[in-house]
Length: 319
Image (cartoon, rainbow, N blue to C red):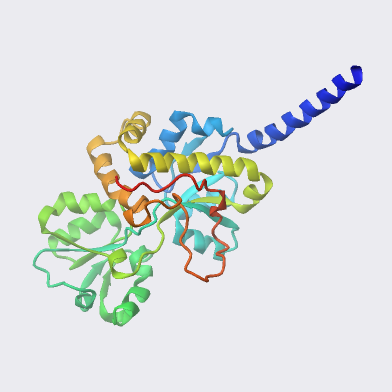
């Protein structure tokens, strides 16, 4: 009897050790945001409020940031265990020697766009020739312009770039200082729509065959390798938040606004209406939420680690 009791005690210690390994590894997970909290981060707050991270053994701390590059720099420096960042920025960080991976797509469709006003003679990409386009040097549409231009038969020098930060583009377009404004971030669409209403014209890159992945959930491969069970539990709780909010965003926005009362509810609701079709486009209905799309026959992408996703969480058919 004593031997059996000792054996049970040993098994109990081993079991607790295994459970605690995952919990301790994930406990205190810090998520570095790519900007201040906003509508696209609402599912993270909602998942935390619902207790889904806690159920996964994760105590989440959400840290506002300054940019995708800033969030990834912190992730690589172990200042956080997860980060929200643009996929292009993640690939650039990997090229710079940082072993980071994308565990989930937050934006399966791209927000890249060109904006102009009614009366400007633009009807197709070819009409961008000889136009002045407002964008700062590292603006995603400006960085990717060579690809866009080549796809549509334009030479790279066909347009004149006017250096403008995002917070100056709307005013410059209104004054006529530029003919076109380039936009690489979903939330700025709301600003253009509010400023110009029915006068606004938009050319979405995704409608023209250029649809690069937007924001992703980034993790350090070393952390995933060291704590695979904890990493998967965290990713699936995170994924559950986004999949649930794609089906019904209102409770998620309520949670976001309660946690960040300085935010403008009207603005965040408008941003959500722009974000959710990018996060859960109808063309992907019924597929695993947040999974990457690999071209047939393509080699595995070393920057992607979406095998941790729950295949039972699907993109909803309607929003």
